[in-house]
Image 1 (spheres, rainbow, N blue to C red):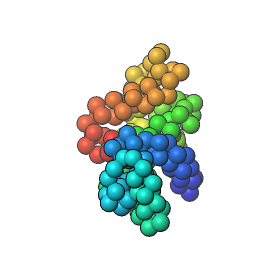
Image 2 (image 1 turned 45 degrees about the horizontal axis):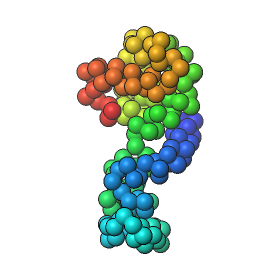
Image 3 (image 1 turned 135 degrees about the horizontal axis):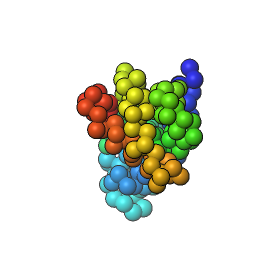
Image 4 (image 1 turned 30 degrees about the vertical axis):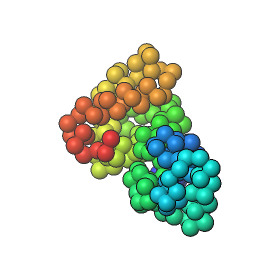
Length: 164
């Protein structure tokens, strides 16, 4: 239950960051949805695209299902959810990675797409603690996440089973 609450909080918090990044995905200001498919211009037409998306409620469905020109990532990109989680739980994760176990580290394994291999994820994190928490990354959670992704991607078992 606690995992669900944490993941729900992250999703809601990350949603606000996901909206700001829609234009970076090639969507207009209205975002994805039926409105962006029917109305393709990037000028004042975006008002009509937004109205179409809001009136028909198709954007929410498109985001969660990966249809209507929306990504298949769901509400937020996996990377953004991981980044927010690491920033919010940085100190706890540092301790849990050093131990090679913990609830937050297990939740992070789920965010990496490897809930079935959580134990291996935690082992790899512990074995590579010094590569993940370098002197440069001690004050930078984003760099810690980059280092962790690198270590998980280097492990053959996790590379094949996780959705990094």
